[in-house]
Amino acid sequence: ALKKECRLKMVARFLLDEEEKEEKLYLLVEIFISSKDFKNIFAKGQSLKVGDLLFKYIESTSPQIGFVVSRKYGNAPQRNKFKRRCRQIFYEKIKQGMRFQVVIMPKDKNIKYSEIKKSINSFLMEVSGV
Image (spheres, rainbow, N blue to C red):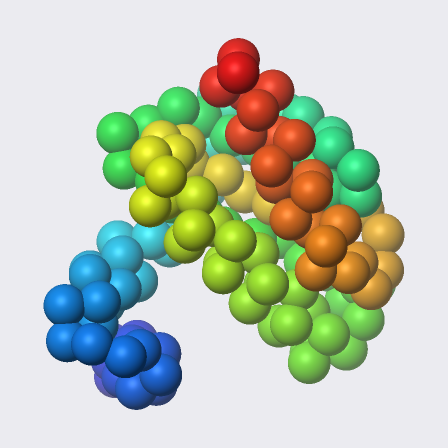
């Protein structure tokens, strides 16, 4: 619990106004998938490979994100960079009304931000039927 609070404070520090801080803190508290939900997504969810990313997903009332990034992707800073990039794009999509629980797995090393964003946008267009 202490680590989660520290992480929330670090993210909140970079936001500009108080209302945005409160909104972002609420999103952070609810955004990460629990181990129970991981099992549910892998058992009942659908898979879709878009670009260099594999998505396992279930439609849900509360949007959540999880990651499976193996050591084959790279060292810890590279894996964390990938997760930070995905999280940032995911926050933007939640504000636009995305409603899925998603587990993202990279299938290639050192994926660029632009490629991640394009893959996530393509994924959302395909699953939402737009």
